[in-house]
Structure formats: structure tokens, C-alpha cells
Length: 115
Image: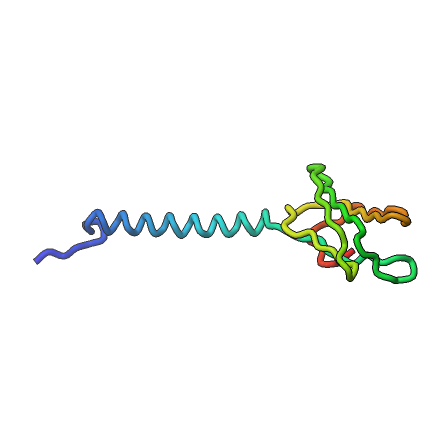
């Protein structure tokens, strides 16, 4: 009667274990890289000096490192959302006819506040 050790296991068992280990490693690496690269959003509410909501104001965000920008308009309740932004530092600029433009530089996307 022969006693089998792990060295003498059939080759398909060893390859299955290697493939499973490689798949687990790839899964862990992909989750870790997504968490570090991640996407963020910038959102807020635009009001005038009296606190009244400003509808249809133009909100532009510009990534300080890449110079890429995205733009949206405020909704009827004065809110805006710019989702799916690469993590980084942004300048947020708001403008509307009849008002002066306002810019907020150095706004990091990982900060949990709104502008």
C-alpha cells in the first residue's frame, strides 16, 4: 500500500491550486488598485448673497494636476453634482449671468464637504 504525499499529487490538482491562488491574488490586487485610484464626486448648492437658490448656474471643475475640466448646471433647487471624477485637487468655479464668478481653488475630492 502506497502513501501519497503532496509532492506526489496528480499534476491536475497542483495546477488547479496554482490557478486558484493566482486568481485570488489578481482579485486582491484589482480591488486594492481600484481603492487607491478611485473615483469621487463634487457636489453642492449655489446661493446668492441673500441665501436664495440660484438655478441654471454654470459650475466648472478643473483638475489642478491634469488641467481637465468638467461642467454642469445647477438644478431647480440650486444643487449640482459632478460624479465620477478622478481623485485629485480641483478648482470649482461658479458663474451665472448677472452675478460675478466665484472660484474655490485647491478643493480635494477626498474631503467630505460640499461647496
